[in-house]
Length: 103
Image 1 (cartoon, rainbow, N blue to C red):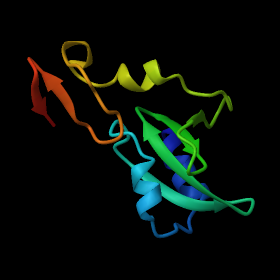
Image 2 (spheres, helix red, strand yellow; image 1 turned 60 degrees about the vertical axis):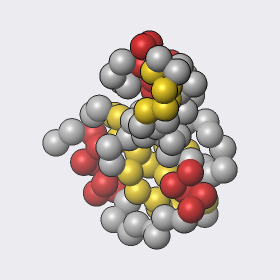
Image 3 (cartoon, one colour; image 1 turned 90 degrees about the horizontal axis):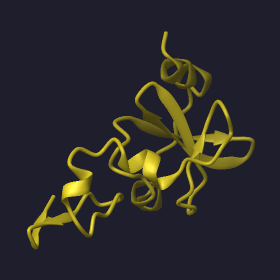
Image 4 (cartoon, helix red, strand yellow; image 1 turned 180 degrees about the vertical axis):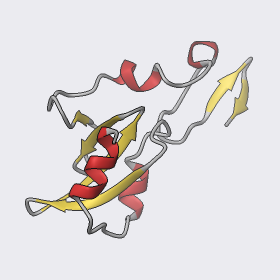
């Protein structure tokens, strides 16, 4: 069982995501959910086989296992062709290529 699956089992009660939750999610997370953790609304997200967490409205993400802040470069490294675009927005997925808008 991968670590992400363990986290899914640890937090069986998922909360309904709000607009603020969705705006706080980088596009690199294929799966995510919101749960109550020690009285706080927390977003848990999968990145490869790892789990990250965030307390909205903060844009800071933390590795679940190490409790260390995730660098922006770590998140952008999984975006294909990241270095070929400009004005990339990690949260909306928009960017420019050859001065043309792309999604």
